Length: 167
Length: 349
Image (cartoon, rainbow over all chains, first blue to last red; front, side):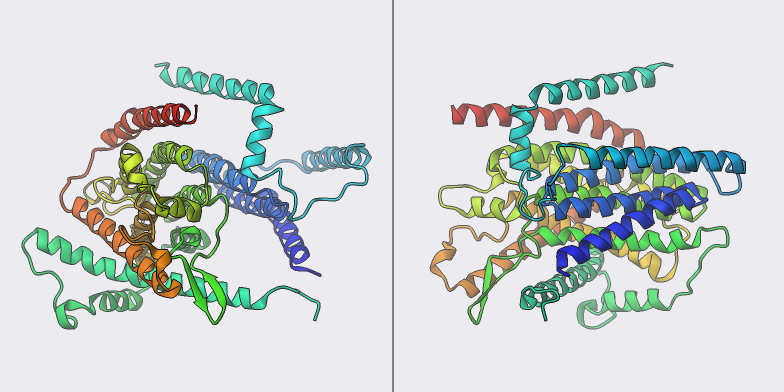
């Protein structure tokens, strides 16, 4: 077992543990903090795939910005384990069943995908995740989707300002 | 042994480097508390701490010892684990940034070249930015888990302040990035050292100014120390903390100050470059030592400026703080970015 494999299994275990704890935690603030652990583990996986830019942007945007806003909202709403509504056992059962079905659908979709047949993950030598290559690809091959996505973000920002301005 | 087949010496070398840098940061932060009190004393025409040892030089040890022996209180209504996690996060994020700073060039130890940088990653600047955005968690977790209204208010203030000033900081760094074309701090320093290039401050004076103001705000230093505004919030987000947990929070502020001064010296003032000296003519080990001394000298100067500002300017009001961040610094940073982009484009074409 090389270092890469040890790191891979460690990060995988950490991500799964974090994800399970997000669901199991009764306290919403704990859930948010476990979700941050999950983001860290996934960023570790990105680094193993040599996608350093993706790894750090994942941390800056999700763990650093979006989760802070989540924490803000949860802290201000003062949600506690006691006030959390308890769902009935049937609701939980059907939730697990539909979630499991969706997961098996995704797995079968990925396994049978033609693009992924006979491909292995490029550990340490893949270079499309480096900032230089990623920037070139985004601004040459995928320039139209990229620009459309940025206009979408701009409209969302304008919308937020308009809602905030309404007295 | 085929298990873990890699250069063990490399691991040892990095571990030693990490240990040295962490202990050096702790030592410098410790003495920064002493100098803060001395600087304050000079500015207010007092003597300052002078009882413990000659010139009061043992004062930080006395302070630390006092904090260790104070009673440890965890409030009944507090969330115990998060209450402990808060100061840990504050210390951790304060320490993590030092990993990408190049502290010197290279040291030659018996034929083995050791780079004086823990990790020369090609996303160095983004890494700093990422760690800075985590600085919020120490404040928020600590403030919330104390279960005290004042603490929560202070934590919310601190978090919104850090988020607001992160934007202007990022925009001022983008302008710098356009000039250097690299995110690696090592490359940025080497570009400033190379012949015919001036330090980045000559090309980005406005960018440096914005970065400096944002660094003051990110470190929660006066005039931006609103999360600790005693007169409005009793004490701040660490109100319920006692003993060394409080010490960690106070200490993290000084480590942050040291690290952000080192980053400013690296990004804008040539890092370990000594002006008017060609390092390549010297013995590499001597050059590395001179480089470390130069970087530390620049860093100490910035730490002094931080203290100078703290004991000179009064605190902003909260609306003024938000006003400066969103309505002054961000437009200024955007203008700076556009001007830099136009100049870079014209020089290319």
